[in-house]
Image (cartoon, rainbow, N blue to C red):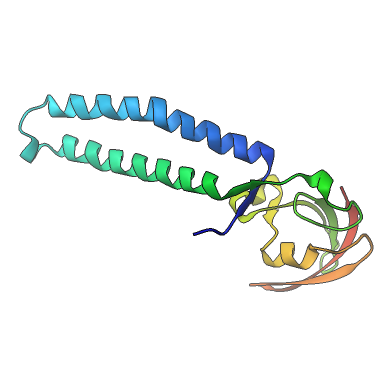
Length: 156
């Protein structure tokens, strides 16, 4: 799987820090839990041991997925893009022409999307509609609930 994942410097550091924590503290705590469960006697009937081993497998799977993500990760720098068009890492202020509400979104890779923080995936219906647009443009985003019409007010 060689498809790249584009990440901001902040998100890349978050993933690296999480991976380091899981590999050190996470594995140490897991080894302690398994040793404690093993001390409870017969392993063939030890549900606590089985649960700890299963949890260990999930921990290793998460570590493996984060490592794989980092091997495909490419750092993106917002300064390398034109300032007058919407691109990944742009913060865009838009007016929803359907209800006159104003929203501010930062367009990010799907791996960084977090709607509660105003970060939307550039591949989402709204993100795709905004990509490449300029201030003053009116765009339509086809979302599951219908069509939303936006006007781009500001790009940062």
